[in-house]
Amino acid sequence: MRQNATIPVIETGAGVCHVYFDKDGDVAKGAAIIRNAKTRRVSVCNALDCLIVDVNRLTDLSTLCSGLQQDNVEIYADDLCYNYLKTSYPPHLLKHASTDTFGTEFLDYKMAVTSTMTIQSAVAHISIYGSGHSECIVTENDWAAGYFMKAVDAACVYVNVPTSFTDGGEFGLGAEIGISTQKLHARGPMGLEELNTYKWIIQGDGQIRQ
Image 1 (cartoon, rainbow, N blue to C red):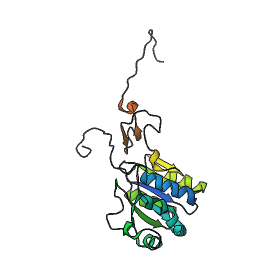
Image 2 (cartoon, one colour):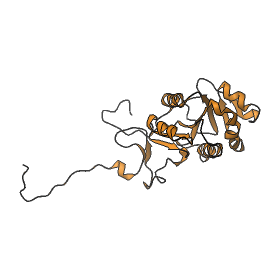
Image 3 (cartoon, rainbow, N blue to C red):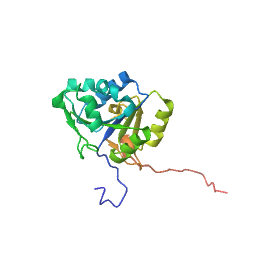
Image 4 (cartoon, rainbow, N blue to C red):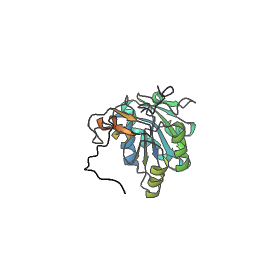
């Protein structure tokens, strides 16, 4: 429909969602956020698809992913992350990432894991593989949080909150019609208001404009 439309349309499509664990991230918060974002409901568009970890915090990767094995989440990790997980994560649930891993909306108990040198490269990864739906940073650094919120182009950007909150009901919009990844006119969770248009009614008594 989008390819053939001759008028602006609202697209409520794929949700390829990321969590970036910053070098100043809190491990306890991160582990809880990652598990909730991935496993609360795996078949919805706000579920986590890819965890990005700062290379300076790879020693915490096993802790960050520890809760996922309770739900039998399969992890598809790049080579560096694989080496950090192979001694702690169940072997039958740990696999090497392929060229198709990143940018995939799994809608299942599956998740990609990769590492990055800087927050800028994390944002670049999201810009390539994200779908403009929901993205999250876990950090205790105000500068990093501010940079991520400004630099990431998505309908919903979270700081220390899981992407599972992207929902019309959670946003106070009532029944959710969809989640728009477009920019005009609705973006993010949509309620009935976003499906309405309006007109101006002006009543007067002979006034003229000077």
